[in-house]
Length: 130
Image (cartoon, rainbow, N blue to C red; front, top):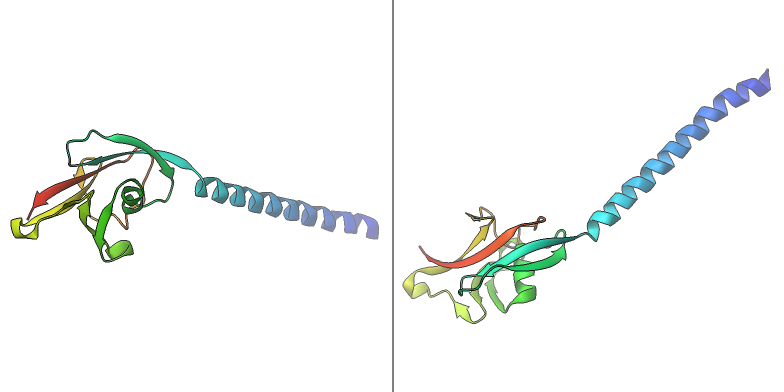
């Protein structure tokens, strides 16, 4: 009788332990997979260029991607950074110009240093007036 009792207690404990191990392993796999996932994005700078298709890691910011591909002048840093020049073309404050940052055709409501790229995003920089 004691042997049956041991088996009836041990079996659910073993199953629970194995289920927890599988769940933890799967979560680790998913986290690692997304950390190294490469995604396609399109980038265009208002200098007459067409969109260029690029590949980058999931989680890269729009500012990081732009800085990797072009000479970018910024003021501030991180999520507070704003672009003042790209490839030697500075926004002229005397003409009330600034570099506007668009995502998928819409003016972004967050800074390029905060916006994490998603697969298929179209990032565009344009000189505009305020």
